[in-house]
Amino acid sequence: MDSILSGAVYDGPAFTTAYFINQKQIEPFMSQFPLEKLRLFGQEGFLALNEKQVLSYPKEEQERWIRTAKRLLDVPEYLALAEHIMYIGRKMQ
Image (cartoon, rainbow, N blue to C red; front, side, top):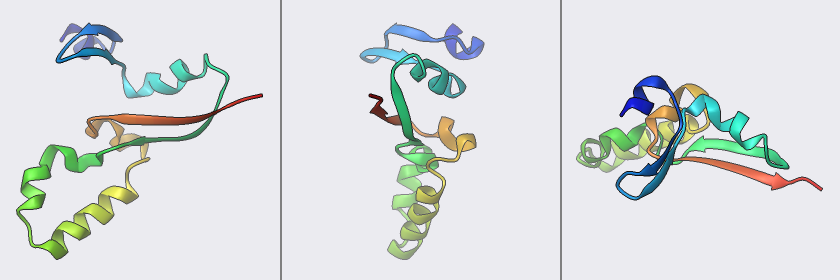
Protein backbone atom coordinates (compact mmCIF):
# COMPACT_ATOMS: atom_id res chain seq x y z
CA MET A 1 0.00 0.00 0.00
CA ASP A 2 2.79 2.45 0.80
CA SER A 3 4.14 2.24 -2.75
CA ILE A 4 0.71 3.06 -4.17
CA LEU A 5 0.39 6.14 -1.98
CA SER A 6 3.95 7.30 -2.60
CA GLY A 7 4.10 6.47 -6.32
CA ALA A 8 7.07 4.17 -5.77
CA VAL A 9 7.66 0.94 -7.67
CA TYR A 10 6.56 -2.26 -5.90
CA ASP A 11 8.23 -5.58 -6.67
CA GLY A 12 7.19 -8.55 -4.55
CA PRO A 13 4.33 -10.67 -3.30
CA ALA A 14 0.74 -9.60 -3.90
CA PHE A 15 -2.00 -11.92 -5.18
CA THR A 16 0.94 -13.40 -7.12
CA THR A 17 4.50 -12.18 -7.60
CA ALA A 18 3.91 -8.70 -8.91
CA TYR A 19 5.59 -5.61 -10.28
CA PHE A 20 3.56 -2.44 -9.91
CA ILE A 21 4.73 0.81 -11.41
CA ASN A 22 3.18 4.24 -11.77
CA GLN A 23 1.84 4.74 -15.30
CA LYS A 24 4.13 7.75 -15.78
CA GLN A 25 7.15 5.55 -15.06
CA ILE A 26 6.44 2.92 -17.73
CA GLU A 27 8.10 4.61 -20.70
CA PRO A 28 11.19 5.72 -18.71
CA PHE A 29 11.51 2.14 -17.38
CA MET A 30 11.19 0.63 -20.86
CA SER A 31 13.67 3.11 -22.35
CA GLN A 32 16.52 1.23 -20.64
CA PHE A 33 15.97 -1.61 -23.13
CA PRO A 34 16.83 -1.40 -26.85
CA LEU A 35 13.19 -1.17 -27.92
CA GLU A 36 11.29 1.07 -30.29
CA LYS A 37 7.91 1.83 -28.70
CA LEU A 38 5.08 0.78 -30.99
CA ARG A 39 2.15 1.15 -28.62
CA LEU A 40 1.23 1.60 -24.95
CA PHE A 41 -2.37 0.96 -23.96
CA GLY A 42 -4.71 -0.16 -21.21
CA GLN A 43 -5.93 -3.65 -21.98
CA GLU A 44 -9.35 -3.45 -20.35
CA GLY A 45 -9.76 0.30 -20.49
CA PHE A 46 -12.06 2.15 -18.15
CA LEU A 47 -14.73 -0.57 -18.38
CA ALA A 48 -12.77 -2.90 -16.10
CA LEU A 49 -14.17 -1.12 -13.06
CA ASN A 50 -17.76 -1.37 -14.31
CA GLU A 51 -17.86 -4.67 -16.20
CA LYS A 52 -20.85 -6.15 -14.32
CA GLN A 53 -22.87 -3.00 -14.77
CA VAL A 54 -22.11 -2.71 -18.50
CA LEU A 55 -22.97 -6.39 -19.03
CA SER A 56 -26.40 -5.73 -17.51
CA TYR A 57 -27.20 -3.21 -20.28
CA PRO A 58 -29.03 -4.11 -23.49
CA LYS A 59 -26.67 -5.46 -26.21
CA GLU A 60 -26.74 -2.25 -28.27
CA GLU A 61 -25.74 -0.12 -25.29
CA GLN A 62 -23.00 -2.60 -24.31
CA GLU A 63 -21.56 -2.32 -27.80
CA ARG A 64 -21.63 1.48 -27.63
CA TRP A 65 -19.68 1.42 -24.34
CA ILE A 66 -17.17 -1.07 -25.78
CA ARG A 67 -16.61 1.05 -28.91
CA THR A 68 -16.03 4.11 -26.71
CA ALA A 69 -13.63 2.22 -24.43
CA LYS A 70 -11.63 0.97 -27.44
CA ARG A 71 -11.19 4.54 -28.70
CA LEU A 72 -9.72 5.55 -25.32
CA LEU A 73 -7.36 2.59 -24.68
CA ASP A 74 -4.17 4.49 -25.50
CA VAL A 75 -5.16 7.88 -24.09
CA PRO A 76 -2.58 8.43 -21.31
CA GLU A 77 -5.12 9.95 -18.91
CA TYR A 78 -7.13 6.71 -18.93
CA LEU A 79 -4.26 4.20 -18.50
CA ALA A 80 -4.63 4.05 -14.73
CA LEU A 81 -8.23 2.86 -15.07
CA ALA A 82 -7.18 -0.38 -16.78
CA GLU A 83 -6.24 -3.42 -14.74
CA HIS A 84 -3.32 -4.17 -17.05
CA ILE A 85 -1.22 -1.96 -19.31
CA MET A 86 0.60 -3.37 -22.31
CA TYR A 87 3.77 -1.97 -23.81
CA ILE A 88 4.49 -3.22 -27.32
CA GLY A 89 7.97 -2.61 -28.62
CA ARG A 90 10.24 -3.76 -31.39
CA LYS A 91 13.84 -4.73 -30.70
CA MET A 92 16.15 -2.20 -32.30
CA GLN A 93 19.01 -3.48 -34.41
